[in-house]
Image (cartoon, protein in one colour):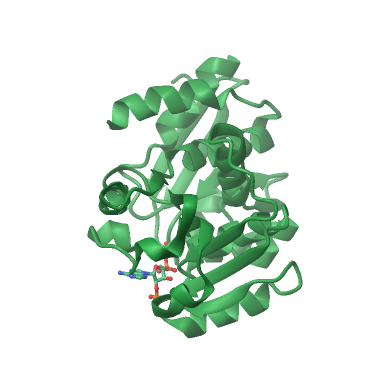
Length: 279
Ligand code: ATR
């Protein structure tokens, strides 16, 4: 792409990023909005992030996305943080306000809530929700999940201590109960169970049983593509409605795009196109 005065330079930093869908999503947003965007996925280590960010900011970059395993490091490098990014200690979006002023935000939670509410039509207020996992992915969605006032929010993890620590960190935002994932039955049934574990990347599953789900309950997997297959198969076998995380991925990207450009893309067209491509 020829660099011109209107070219918006963006990037994704993480590891691995070679199979990321983000460049494709942002090029679809660019085509839709008529903006000239150069969005590149760049492999990067934790120790190399600061230099790579500086390079992008110094050469006219407008901002970037940050993915696994760099979200915590990015929260340290941002010079200003949104409330949700500070609470999560995780940044997935940086906006370069100047060469040295880097605003860090986290659009993962907004992306999840928009996919649940607007695309899937799920109400969250007054519902009983469980999150499986207490790593970076869970931390990134807790702030936004607490906003619609669920009746109950249980954070369940294989290593219970991590769930306890994360729940305590979010106690200033709302009530989160920590649980050992093996004892989740004690808090059931749930209207919505969100898988924020990384088990799907090893084609495995967090421990689940049909009794955890209320009638008409939904299961939402933050994973998509092949990492979503094991959970999708389990849900199909047990009659649980299950949704992969592609909609969230596209919605969080749309929120990042809006922060960088001020333009709100139409996500429904992109969800349709990429769902077709992934199937
Ligand atoms: P991420 O940034 O993707 O959240 P992470 O911080 O490494 O990655 O966290 C991965 C989460 O998936 C953790 O909650 C992990 O549980 P532990 O804290 O006990 O390690 C969870 N996880 C990974 N594989 C799992 C499995 N097979 N069953 C249940 N939980 C699993």
